[in-house]
Image (cartoon, helix red, strand yellow):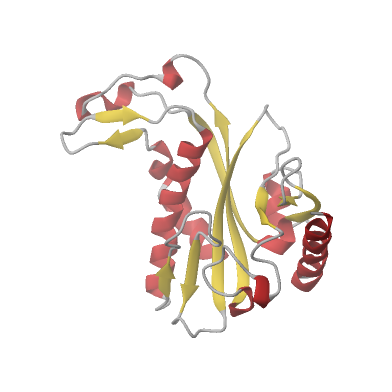
Amino acid sequence: MRDFILDKLASIQNGYSICGLVDRRGRVYPLGSDTKVIGAIFEIVARQVIAAYAARNDLILLEPKQQNFYPDFTLMRGEDDPAKIAIDVKTTYRRSENATFSYTLGSYTSFLNPETQSKNIVFPYSEYKEHWIIGFVYNRVEGKRAADASIYSFDELQNIVLPFDDVEVFVQEKWRIAGRHPGSGNTANIGSLRGRLEDFAAGNGAFSSQSEFEAYWREKGALRRERK
């Protein structure tokens, strides 16, 4: 799966030049620099590749009906498939050239819980055999032009400044890139390793197995719930 997704993403590099949203009258609204919007763009690009992989392997591609549910995409042969594949798309930006970066990998107090307490997950956690991350990292393009609020026509697409450049991507199992510290201050998010793209591609995380990763973060979640 990893090689297929990476090869397919490499073949659609122009997907990273999405520059705006279009209404039915053909007016183009620039993206702006909001990181959530840019993250959504990369998720749209990734979705096309995941759909191609599903079609090639006779799998069903399912997306959650509720917001903030894990995972972004489920691959399965049917709802009774005990070996479903979870795929999350993660995006971040470099704060400087050659800077290290990290991601948050989901809450350790929700879907990692024992089955009787699981929440915010499309299917019970035990039904997922694999958990993958497609991770994007990019440089932010700052300045007035990148935050352009003008409305353009199709003939003016080349005049729209992209709010990002130098996009790189990796595909790796979640446990292989996970760290041992929360990923966002005082919130209950699993933190990834901090490194460069090659560290994520190689899976240089803190754990030696998925079971070790799950046990560690489940214990963290139990301790956090006890303190409340």
